[in-house]
Image (cartoon, rainbow, N blue to C red; front, side, top):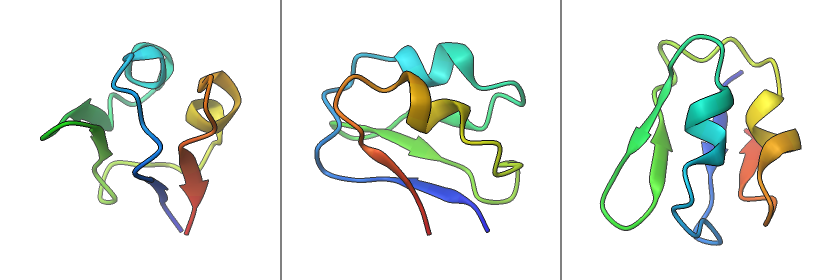
Length: 56
């Protein structure tokens, strides 16, 4: 089950920099996670300053 980034995202990029499989990219106003690439490791959730990434 992949993670998804909520609207709380402030587009800081900290999650994308820490993702071990490069599943996170800049979207329209917030970052997005490619569910086909995400390995459900939770690194994005633990590095996000606003807690935007959530497990689906």
